[in-house]
Length: 138
Image (cartoon, rainbow, N blue to C red; front, side, top):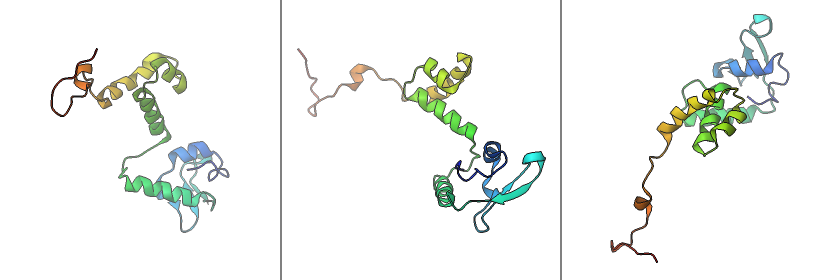
């Protein structure tokens, strides 16, 4: 949910992180907050501003067949993995993620190892002419 939509909530960041799709009532323009301030359930307004953006986001997730719960923490994991897949140094990734110990960041290297394209010999990467004859250089 966008920061604009949550601006009027008592503890917007925590409440957004715990929000579920079934807690949003687009027709009535309401958001149901569970265990909010004072550990009480309540409803609050779903602002018109940002409502269509939220609908498009949820539709995209549905169309992408994302059926697992996704949280801010999930996005953090994705960020970490993309850093490493794109060749960002482990120490730089550690800094971006705010990890005190590099060992915490290194947990992601196990996931990245499974996602990388297997290494190939430079000889296998050279282009071979259509006639199949090897080309000589120099």
